[in-house]
Length: 465
Image (tube, rainbow, N blue to C red; front, side):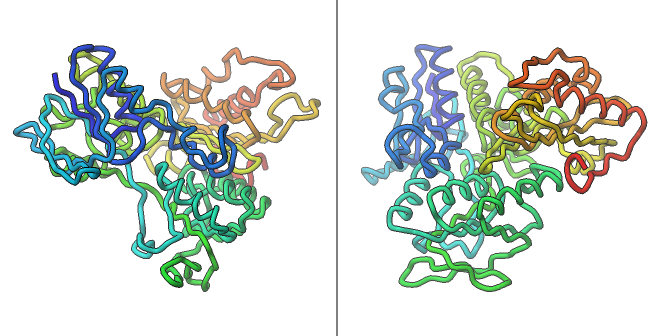
């Protein structure tokens, strides 16, 4: 059995390791185009902010497994190898070795495409201008760190999604003056409903970030091949460093060339076993669509845990096993300075767009017993379906680990739980962690009443108002 894995980060290495565990005799080869495998890309902003262990600026701290460690498991890893073509009929791939400059053909019995996503770049974000970066992998992080070491003092971040928000914090903490430009009216995109996006935006401003929403970038200003600023409809903004964080796109060139079907989202279409429509070709990770368990629709949600799980499923099945990927509920969490933000399932806006008859309630409370000195505000929105009372989603804005309550809702969403199920849960209580009636239980009681009475669910001006 000859297994080829294209891509050696989350899904690819999970698949290779799981395939080896289930078949000790398979010949498993991983082809990775970069110099790194098996690392936590989500930690990149925190290396930049000096929040990680190890030496300052050491991105190696993110590495979970080295090529040598994988070799010890009987998995061949080839770095700096670009797969440039797939012949599905002959079951071969064309590989270019960037170190030797040679191109060769590799046969396979089973092929896994774990090519992930690439950062979107608008036309104005020229690749040949020094100081203009994206942040998707370790080389990106190293390039940004190099500019910081050169003495960059003014940073412009274009895009207010997860990466843009995290990098805004990282660079502010490194002492840079940070301007964040977002073309929409609020940051946090579709992750949150409007009132909760406002809380995130205010947090940025309170931390000293120059946040400009409703701003369109039109081009770059350069001198001697290095960026000096960006041009907007309101005029120029000076910058020594520009981070483009306007989203990602699934890297599907190989899949399309091999005849693999793409879904409506533009990502690779796979079944629950991670099979594509082409015999012998599998796909896993951020390059794939997944089933959203709340809407039952196919969506593209590139998240780290899902990528690892899809890789495990593919690894089992490529060596003759029978595993299934159960889908996702869209759980995500991030930090912005002193606030933590989490969401799962659907927002009210997403539920409306999906045609669901949804209702939401908002509650602002303390994250544990109010008489405790370290208690903080916690803003919660719960969303459910009228009539059935089925939970649809939740959003949290708070401090520290308080927003990890999102996992309770995520667990209920996986089992299609109802508001009544949440209201009757036996949740932990001690004053340093929760009130005796946890904020989730109080919100569930209010939402149950809203579901029964058919309240409108329109958001208040601010959470808890």
